[in-house]
Length: 420
Image 1 (spheres, rainbow, N blue to C red):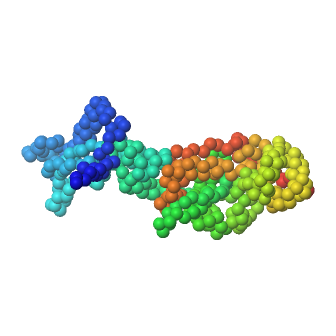
Image 2 (image 1 turned 90 degrees about the vertical axis):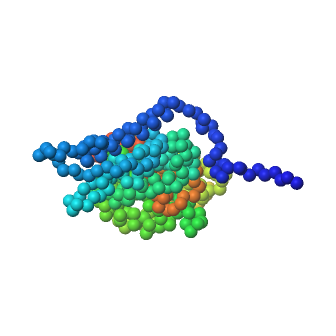
Image 3 (image 1 turned 135 degrees about the horizontal axis):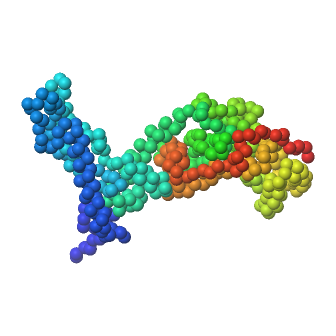
């Protein structure tokens, strides 16, 4: 009996031979431009070689002139090279030459326009890296850029381009901070999944954002750590201080015990603001679910009051009510102490930006939205580097803090009275 097989006849993978939407779109303008690009690049390299040999192709130096320069070398054919740029993939005939040395020996001429072993232009690398940072994983970049590069860019190419970014990442990690006019720090951590020993493992990314005197927010550090311990935070703070970071006027933190201990060690006496959003979550964690709306209403009414006196009176009312209704909620609020209300010592125009670590929280959301297509990142260092690259490339931007016009001349006032 004759068997029926559905196996593809071609030796090529089905994904390489299948026809997709846009594959049969032909643009004569694009085709003509790419052909001219090949000629233009070839002319550039030929002109570079003409300048090196002191004569154009097929011409010789005069032999009888007294001032005629000595021959510096000779041509010997061409070499085929493939180059990928924003103009697509093109094949180029690169001229070859031998240059005469002072010792009588000859060496191979190397073009400075098209470097040895160069396969892509820097603009093409930037486009590939930008596509990856925009949220396309390494395997999908080939499909996304197929119309431009003709399928010549795969996941291995993306990985090689990404490794080039590491040089900029390493330089950023050791840059001097002595000239940064930092007046405020925002510190928080986030958890991401990375691949360690072939298993998905949750690690902490510790993030430090600085606020300049002009209100601009800048990323100062992002490190991959096993957790948010005091030792982990201390190593980051010591590194920032070692690179010249000045003592800040205010610290905005998430309330983690490890971070609190590290701050007390290196910057004892600097005013600290506990994030009001994190504390709200803590209060809800101590209350039954049926009381969540009531806790939220009372807490919001207190935190978003318009004057320090109102905040003080509403805090006392909150504690009196919840000591009777749910003691754990009142105890959680008291645990934060006056650090939850440090923002009231600033001008009211700055309260919104000083109350929370939302500047980092928003970055966390954008970062997690970006890595959703990959699920698990290949390494801990890749996670930290990707977080930095999203900001450094402009994929994610940070605006000035509220009340920035008064940052440079702000002095920290006295805390509110917490006596209940």
